[in-house]
Structure formats: C-alpha cells, structure tokens
Image 1: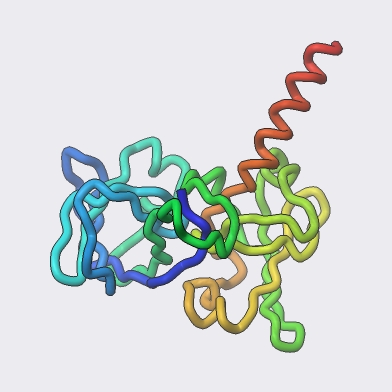
Image 2: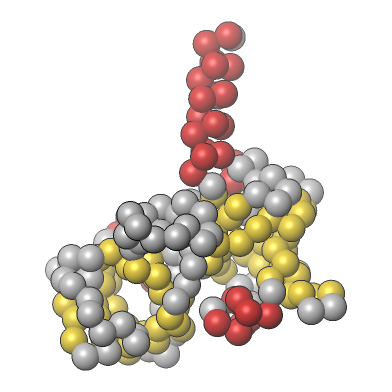
Length: 200
C-alpha cells in the first residue's frame, strides 16, 4: 500500500524486452532497496527485480502494459516514485493501492494565482468515483478533486510544492496520466450496484 506522497523522481536509464516483460532500469536516490519490494512508479505498483548503487529494475507484464502508459516510457522519461508504506508511517495523502484504473488525458491546463489547474478526462465509470474535494491519485500523486468537469472528468488544483517536486509540473494538453480512484469509493459503488441489481 502507498499514500501518494512522492519522495523521489526517477529517470528511466534503460528499456529492454525480457522474459519478465518490459524491463526498466530506473535511476533513483534510494540507497537501501531490497529485491522483491514494491515501488509505485507513476502510481503503478511494480516489484524491484534487481538493484544497485542508485538504480533498480522493474518489469511490466502485458496486463500492466494494457492499463498504463509504461509501454511509452523511454530512456530519459521521468517517473514519480514512492516506496510502500510501513504500518507505523503517517498517511500524509490517502490510501493508494498502486492499481491504475485507467489512463486519463489532460484536456486543459491553466493558472489561477499560485495554483496550476489541470483538467483530466477519464472514462465515465471512473468519473463516477470522483466527488468535489475527494481523493484521487494521478501519476502516483495523492491529490484533491478541485471540481468535476461535466460527466467526463475532474479538475486538479496543484500547489507549487507538488508542481516542483513531481512530474506534474510538466503536464500539457494531451498528456496521458495514470489515474487511480479512491478505493473506498470503489467499494461503495460496487455495493450499491449489487443492491440495485437485487432490486430489479
């Protein structure tokens, strides 16, 4: 489990196709990694296969590639990183599973005072999970839904601290981002769907 508090921005150093899938070597500041631990890479939970001084490798299988933008990552791509939380850690963001629900598309970017406003379009079933001031994870960053954008998506209001310490400051119209809806909203939606089905 993660909390969406990114603490490093890694750089893809090498991309290869191996028996394990699309393998990525990522440059990082992390110095005490363990093979087999989980790291959220732009919000996608991946397993450390090997590691060394300032680097680690992960691999994405075909089902992960189907649900993410990882197939587009190349040498030099910057990715938000977060290690799995310990039970004793503060939950500074919200409960994040590292399971990408969809790839959203940035449809508008603007500034209002000191805030960077970003509109993200998502499929209807994901848009239904969003509520104003609720939680959403975008490229691994725990964020607050600033507003709903019709029935097609949501707006983010990104503060200067987050903009400068994650990849989100580089978002442009047309950027594709990983979106994970709030897990509590998913369970509530599922329960209500089952109840509606039972009544019909």
